[in-house]
Image (tube, rainbow, N blue to C red; front, side, top):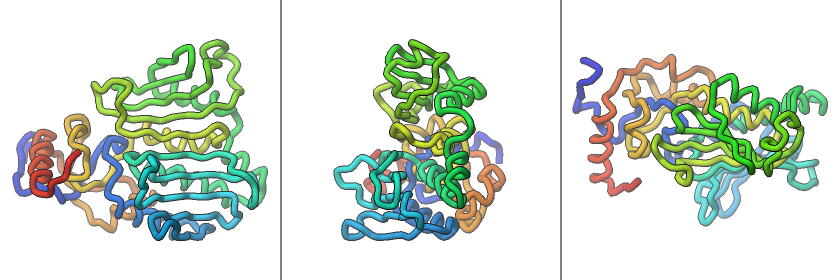
Length: 299
């Protein structure tokens, strides 16, 4: 079948599809987030999972008691579904945290959790510290990444900011103007926000945001940033893909097994290796509209 032809039998809202870039694929179904969290904890040893808030929240605590990963199954009034946090000691205060809002793809939050888990697996403080922070300060590392991927410098007198050439994703470092005033002096702490939005939306509308507090280790920020500068593909049901993004993303029918998909989520393979068939984006829009009418779902 030609690339621009629609196969009506394949255009079903419940069909599994491969979406690229994955950062615009939507957060996925909450049940999927829960199962992926369970798979993460199975693969990454050294964490204990607890249920809180009457089962509305799951919290994983590292064996060393300095790491927490929280998944809010029912966020309620909170605007974050995932939180990854580090503590000064087993009984100390929280040192830093990374919050991922309700629309952030679960793959991005779990990439940060995986990087943190990897660092905690080292037996010495010095080794953990080097894995978490690297040899350069955070600003230096982020600038190197930005320049390597040709993101545009859109910094202002109050913040360091870069965005992708197509303006669908970007980074803000809330440095109070330090980068603007003295770009050669880069060793200062600041929070970082990563964001994504569809092409054409103004800066006040984002599809999702992830915020890393001041003192969040560099490696955890770059773990999430890598999903933006080197976009992955994500697996979703068609009805889970935000309708506003269907004209922007590449959507293809998923031809593999769901077991392969589970392996992909934990990093054992990549969706680029999974057999897919090109799909017409306009057909995807029509299919989602039909699925929305039948389920009463809104976007």
